[in-house]
Image (cartoon, rainbow, N blue to C red; front, top):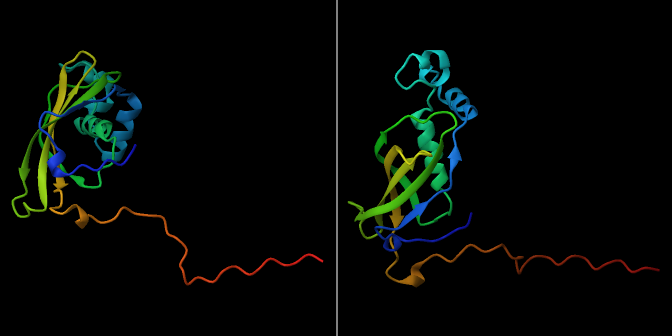
Length: 178
């Protein structure tokens, strides 16, 4: 993971990135059920699921969403933050043992309605597919992004490590050996 500064003006529609795969496990489902309190039989009861059209236990949609969004989180951009998610759709079930991959593509940018001179929004279409290439989840990730300052010297200086104070007292001289 590294820090990569990208201002609003750097977000170009059509820019895309692709993750490697991540297999959804039974442990993922059990942990997510415990964290959320969602113990519905769709996720926890294999016998009940066998009587349903999907046939097997399925991962929580919110589990798949959180894993997928986490898979796209690589670099740290100090000039942007997540503003939220729009148009979330759980398109197909994800089963224990399915491997998901994520494609994230910038689809557009727009001004912030109240602070257009300071911020803008970047929309990123996030598409999650299973190992068969079928779309299982789709959403738009909205980023709030700082605009490039009109004057580059207006940027705050990068953080530095603290240096000793010029008024600090020097250490006492070492004792002489006799």
